[in-house]
Length: 571
Image (cartoon, rainbow, N blue to C red; front, side):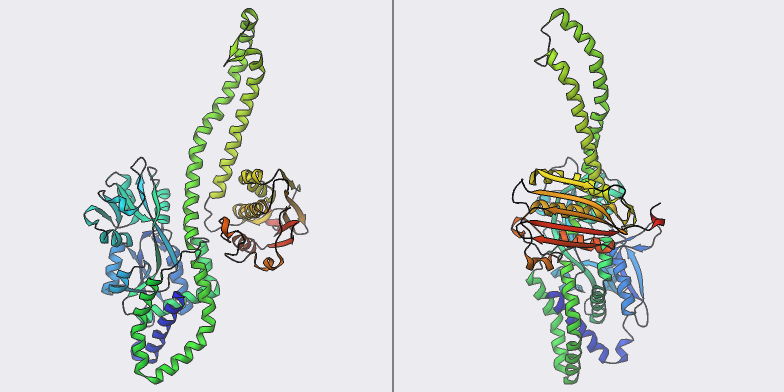
């Protein structure tokens, strides 16, 4: 509701000023000169300078797309964040493409468009440092942070001014922490994890995740309603055309709801509506024209703004998922190290056991009564080789599972397409959820048809779809005696993956809503309603379909259809 009101208010201001005549329009940036868009030079993946020194990131792509649909020219200037805030205040830049919302900033500094994302902030520390769980725990410690950022404002209000070590960028703040020149650093979670990985700051870790969650959007100098309205309208148009979703998925992925506080919504609404009410009362003619234009635009924009709000309700989850992927890769690496030693040493132990058997046989024959580990030698002689073989097999299974986890958590920038073996992707997905399958049923069966044609897509995304389908099947079973089956087969010029369960089935009135975002019948057990929605989006992107067939009390069959890759892609 807040996004709707804020956008309509800004749009009304833009129409009023345009009706005032060409004398005002000539002063609007984007008409007589390019709009100067400011941003942080090192805040990935939101905004940063790439290896060639060109502006890149989620905010940059969003600004370019808005400029294109609104017929504006833009010019980017990325630098130290504190310098960019000063440049906006002094009029050297017209708009900041990414700024966190706060009441203090709205009252004294800027006006905001509806937020285009949500940013979680976290506390980072060196490994082995004392644990902390909140911002209050940082008192008495030296804290590095981004100068001029929202955490600077927050900690200053909390009385931390004398304990702060300032840096121009989040990367510089984390380097201060890694070098031991401060005790902790506070910055956004996703940029922080990205910087640690890219700069190999291996001695840093997250001490406390999500200590603050901030709305994040475009910001103009206070009073610049025309430019605010143009960017708000452009953002709504991008959402209606699907371009916003494309940019968001490219850089951030699927996210979940973070509720908006009504007191903040009312403050922002009052600050925007106050000058508008005065303008509307000033002239009856303008009021008549505006009412007509707003009525014409409201119907088409309401749907777009509601969809934009729904997308924003998913934003926190992607931030967590991106950070989780990085953490999974690190954990997998730590597991592989000791497991590698086991795999290296077990073959040597097997050879040593074989070499000592003859000596121990002779000793036992001469002296008798020999025991190993409290077990008679004759029994241990038979069981020890079997024990070593089982240990080797277990270590190799650990290695396979860790490698599957690393592949599944790997970040696929751009989600490239390549020929994919559907059988291999399905088998890997089943291995990843093996524990859930064994807990849910004693009757699991996998039947993979041989010599299937390959499909064109992403192995990781196909695995994600199969995992969602198998987990849903397991969760539908009332007891372990009911079966779950997965099978693959060729189907003309495509490939079928079918997941069948003998669960409780799906109610007929629920069938049309299965892939709707946030629709779930398992809310009380932690369901979010995003699994099938995300899966349906992935399948549509790959050119395939998801089909559901269910009989209540008997079970469900979900069929994934994917087109086979053309012959020139199979090589």
